[in-house]
Length: 277
Image (cartoon, one colour):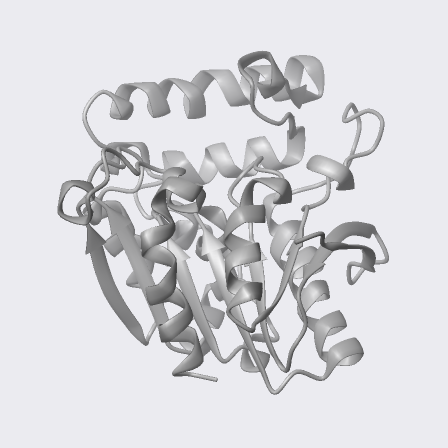
């Protein structure tokens, strides 16, 4: 399926690059993980669209096709990703498509941040995949030390020294400095972003839409404990833990849910969303 390329204004007017897959009266908005471009979710989005759902993906500011020519000096925070970009996509979808229902898929930070929305009443349900607390002590095995090093050293040092974090050096997307600093600060806090007194944390308790929250047994970042810690902020959560071997899969980890090899998992998402449409 060839998606329709779109330009959508965030709430502050910043132009986001987005794509629409399929059409229909029931819409799914996919919120990406940190520094993951929307293209990564194309197979999952196509599957949902073929199941009769209208699907939108988008790149947060500073990521993928929503990135300026240079990230040095580019003003963006993780909070902007939700209060300007995610909220702006929701506003635009309701204004331009008037869907009968609007659902969200949130991968990692895409599910973590959603509770900060001030327009969460416009959401009918949300499915999250590895939407975990990023506190380094909740990560699994050796990732405790790896994440601790990144959030105490790598992210702050590169953000300060280069004006952005050059993750493209290791095959990922570069990260705006403001996003990196804020995210690293959250990951150093035992309560993750829920411990940040500058955020409107009270909005989580107002997120009344049902949430299906997946954790994955071989995900060393999204351990069950980390997912439980983050999902404790939402008032209406159904938890599901996936064990790859029981599903006939060799691995899923933090990113594998959206790869074609894991497509056996996707029908359950469609069924769950349609039951709440």
